[in-house]
Image 1: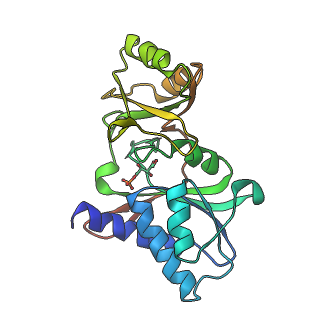
Image 2 (image 1 turned 30 degrees about the vertical axis):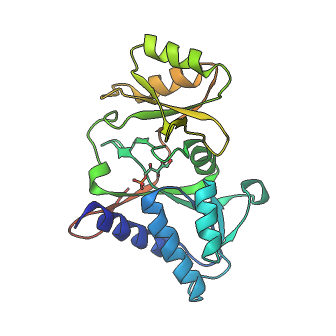
Length: 225
Ligand code: 5RP
């Protein structure tokens, strides 16, 4: 199976964990697109009722609403039962890098208030150690060149996330800087260092934030706990 087929497999499988009446966090990305498509189908067929979605990006809101899924603002719900999201890398010890799609800030906020978090990935996302995938950090535009320079001085090999010939803007209108680290030896220490740099709003290091992972494999979907 190619990567896209594996993404479709895990996306579809994850909808089996959604039950009628749930408030569901809907992630962002190409794998999540398959999940939202399937959820829309189940809602339209009447197999899942009273589903409320809380999205992690304007892109997902648009898709979900076009399929007839009821969407509420995060502040209009008192909890989220289950969030299903993608990931860019998951290490052996279940730590993750997210934000390849630029939605890391809302994704982390939604994950934080979720009773359970499930990541859906194709098998290529499982790694021994984090870092090959460039680590995104979201920065406030004001003075962001100075944040970039500091990251460069520290040897973190930053690049601006681009959208054509302009800097990419997140749903909060912030910029994203990708750090080309290759290997992250101490994810917690790095996350702590970055989040304390003035101007950085959030990092794509998602540590101790996932309960279950569904991996799309050639032998079918596998659940890791
Ligand atoms: C978006 C994300 C995505 O979940 C992550 O990039 C995985 O995306 P895809 O399913 O397209 O590979 O964190 O900010």
